[in-house]
Length: 336
Image (cartoon, rainbow, N blue to C red):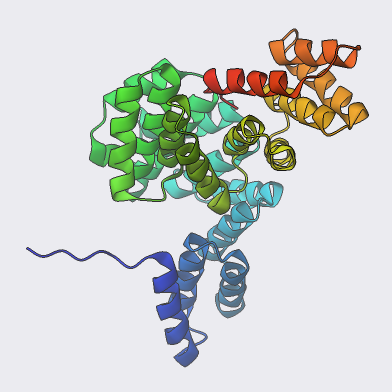
């Protein structure tokens, strides 16, 4: 039987916009358009549709949930959390609400809370229904962030590809990579990307494998694709910074590490590497600040020791800085 590929979010959004031109106050069309706009990355447009829906139907639970989704996309996490927690009190035991609340907790760095919210949905206590694959991916992300890699791997191994979905399979590929199982990581990343060519963790796994194989341009292209669509991905920015040092592009390296630290500040390696870059560019004072911060986050780490020695008076040699970057690259992955 012939199958057809469902339209992508941008195509669906364009179609819905045409329908809304004929029926601009239709709540169902507004809801579908808001979802398509979110998936297409058109966040401001998604909010316009949500606000129009609220104007038509009032502040219902359904529109509150959609507004929380917009706030998550905007990274207005405190407001998103407040909306979802209120919804959870009114509507307990709803998988979609718990999934999004756990995702907010993960983005806020409260990984234990994220896992706690999702645990009943992953242990057989509750049936997640249509949200099962999203819950699976969220659970694996929480375990990965908590560095409970073996637990995550065992859990993923006990599920079929259909139970994991593309996102769960992609996260499992990253877990496998970080555990040092490159063959499994590659296999799972390929499977995830066959279902969803934009799946974030699978793209990261593929680029990381290229990095470890010294396929530098392939790795660079992969990480650039990730940050183009997901600018909050600290690990991808860190990888791009390392690659920029290796090729001697100091301004690009600086921008990449600054973007990485903006996304997630508590990275000893990124602070240490940015310190190297700033010193090379003649900015000694900020280099010292980042070297000290690197040492605070990971006392005695090699990059911080190296930078403190240089800042104390040792001569800086560009070739040696690039060699340090290669050492960072060789020790990839670094989980942040």
